[in-house]
Length: 70
Image 1: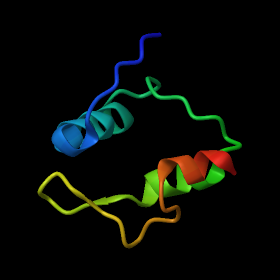
Image 2 (image 1 turned 120 degrees about the vertical axis):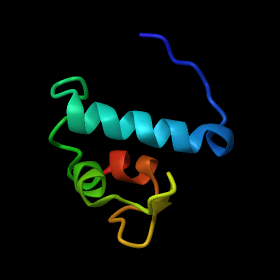
Image 3 (image 1 turned 60 degrees about the horizontal axis):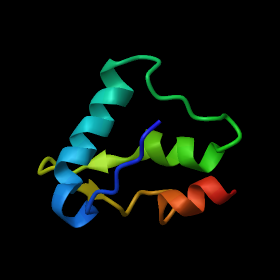
């Protein structure tokens, strides 16, 4: 696996669209360990505002990092 750092503030709309596509349309390409229940809940309840930006109000976790830690 290769990890390429990306500036989130410049690429967030593209990253959100790509993540959404992987999770909705490419069944099985994203695997999340079931022990990360907060992360799974946050991903299931994520709401996009129509402009490629997440509405963070209904999130269960503040950040992805805080979801993974628990």
